[in-house]
Each structure stands twice: as structure tokens, then as C-alpha cells.
Amino acid sequence: MAMAWDRPTSSASAGWTRYVLERQYDYPVTAIRGSTLGTADLSRFQVLILPDQGFGEGYAQAFGANGIRRLKEWVSAGGTLIGVGGALGFLADSRVALLAITQEYLARPAEAAKRAEAPKPEAAKPEAAEARAPGKLLASEADYLREIQAERELPDTTVGVMLRAKLDPDHWITAGLGETVTALVSGRAIYSPIKLDKGVNAAVFLGPDQLLASGYLWEENRKQLAYKPLVVVAREGRGYVVGFTADPNFRASMDGLNVLFMNAVFRTPPRTRSAGLSEE
Image 1 (cartoon, rainbow, N blue to C red):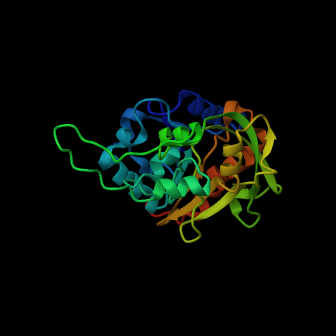
Image 2: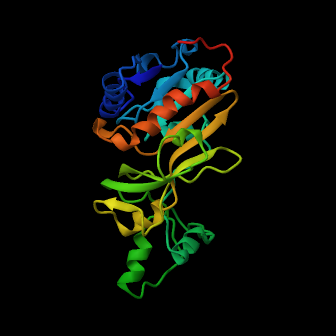
Image 3: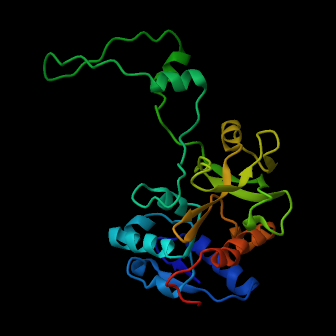
């Protein structure tokens, strides 16, 4: 088993993950520094964990084009790739395409969404060096506030709330667990559910009225997070990609998620029909 270490990972996320595996479960992990991710020999490993990303350089830069190609080949040959938090943005990137999910913009009321998607009038050609726009009357402060609103923006940041998620009882990654789990969610990344032909939403947040277990959650976030995935599992060739939209090892204190994470780590490799990978 290997995991990314140092930049571009979040040092906190990487540390929590390694602590849970090595100290709580007494299982050794090989750390691969970010500067060598693109050239590391992954054939020695059955599992690679990508913790949440830190600030600055991301996984795409760390791997590089050639490293991304080698990563995809390793997964297709039977590797198990586990992404956490910000790593899902990398796995869902069109250049990587290992998870068919999309980070969502802020959901808007139907009227606002329709207005944002409406075709814009063609700008008038400038009569001189200065370009002009068609005239528009703003009749109220509400019109003004709508006018200055960005057409696309990310959801507001969630600052650490406990949310409930329902588990797929028929999926092996949820074995040994009950009907629901509780996860600590922070940040502003909300991902669309994965389509049935692309993977499985193994854990999905509950509806807006049952979602919040503890903490304060903005109304818009509560509505948009409802029925969005906490855990997605996708097949890639002979291998698997598992994505956690929230860190299951937060401060090594999320004991209720340990089984879910360990299932990803230990139950996935036997299902990969490994080809060309060692048994380390």
C-alpha cells in the first residue's frame, strides 16, 4: 500500500490517514513524495491513496501528463486508487477521467438559473475605441443585486458540520455497517452523483430535512448537499477507483467511518482481478 506524501497533499489529511492506518490499525504504508509521483513504480503496490490536496500545486502538476498516463494504466491493470476530498477534483478532471463526477456550481432558483442560461444579446459594435452595452433599467435594489451576481459561482464554504449519509446495503464497501453513517463536511466542493453506467454511489447524503446531524449549515448548502454522494466507486479496467467527498479520517477521530475506509483499502484489491501487480 502506498500513499501520496508531502506536496501537493494537505499535510493534515495525509497525516490523519497515515495515523489511522499505521497507529490505529498497525498496517504499514509506503509514502511517495509528490515530487516523484509521476515517475514512481506503482507496480509494487495494490493500493494508492491520494489524500486531500493542500494549497498551491495540485495533483495534476505533480503527476504531469506522463505520470497521469502511467497512473491510469496502473489502475486499469488492477490497481485500487482511493481519492479523498480535493483529490476528487483531480480524478474527475477531463485530462484524467477516472471518476465520472462533476463539481457543482451554486444551485440557483429556477428563475435565476433560466436567466443565467439565456442567450446574451449580441454586443453592439463599438462606434469608436470604447465598446458599449445595450441600455438596461434597474427599477429596484433587488434588480441591482441580481445584476451584480456572478453568473456562475461555487457554493458558500461549509465550516465543519456533521452530516448523515445513507449507505447502499448491497455494496461490499459498506459491509459491516448499518443504514447510515455520519461524516464531517467542510469546504465548498459538492459533487454530482455518478451515473449508474459509470459507477456506484455507495454512500449518499440524506434529504434536506434529515441531513444535518450537528452544526450550522447554510440553507442553500443544505438543499444542494441533499442526495449528493459521500462515497463513489467506479470500475476502471481491472481496477477500481474509490472517492470520498469528505475526509473519512478527519483528525483520526471519525471512528464511525473507519470500517468504510478500511473496506475501501482491504476489500477492494481482491476484486480487481489483478494483472501484473505484485502481492505486496
